[in-house]
Image (cartoon, rainbow, N blue to C red; front, side, top):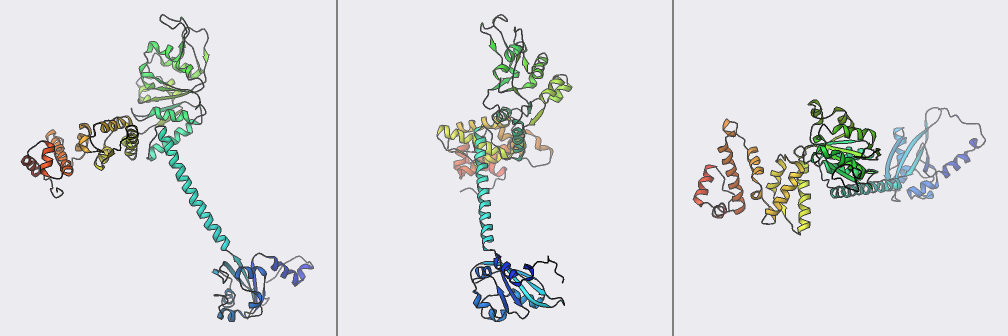
Length: 472
């Protein structure tokens, strides 16, 4: 093996190399080809806890037999003639990474072993500390996530589904810019809530948020309502004039709700205001510049409306800069009970009650189609809260349309009779009897609750093949 180095007087001096080893933070042990210890540095003593006079000039085999150390990596190297590394613990109690390598002469014969021992106790300790920091970080991240969820609850946003998480992510991105956003979704999905979310997370959050219900404004009043008017501009006008919705929203956000219901005759006027970012109050001589962020919401498919000639194509493109579609509640079942609990908690706090929902009702609510979406769910929870006579909402309080759908969904036969009204009514009756029996336990009590004779109840139970094992 050839060694290349600069021809320097220090490098010719063996004491120089010993000084180098002495200054190393790693422990070094040198032994000859018989296993006799020739040299150890101070770092080796510090790591292993073995004093120099205990091992210098001694044979490693004898030291191992005397249990000075549990394993001698240098002896293993002399046996296998190759570099060996291992982590083990010395009498000092410190964990160390030991790497021993053979030293060959020019004839490729082993003349000794160099043993490098590095204290890894601190590294292990540091790793544990890093793991603790990671755990704390994850814990704080979870807590921040919970706080974030609580904050969203205050904003009326309650969700668990991935679909809504993606919708809110889009809304949050949109909030950073002044681009026009078109929020679409079925009636009751919470389009206005998303609009308020965008406004409250934008740089306009300290400005006004003005909602305009486009479906409620007659076409003849459109200009005066949205753009305002000057004093005396028409008969019946206020002598002080009036600011329009756009001017009231200056410096903030305007939500054009139900924009799909706008009459074709007024759509060009809205388009002009959006394009120029200026309005012309009725009776005014000059237009007024405005600084408004525009959000629009509709449950109408505007693309179809454009094809049918019911909505201007150029206005659609002006509104549809950044589209956000809110999925219906039936497509995000994970959110149903989360939202229901939110509304119920609000009512419980307001009226100082502790009403809960039974597991059966939870299952029915989860599988209901919710044509009215979140708004229908909120109304239903309030209805159930009011009519509920006890501390738990049960199946008996559910309105007929919810139960009817539940029964219809439970039909599992495949013949044509499944669609017959009498069959559906019988399944409805069977369902009522089963739940009444579970609640009242005995046939007598159940019959009294249903206001029928016990013998009638027995006949119906036999007819519907209702198992009586659960009756006490």
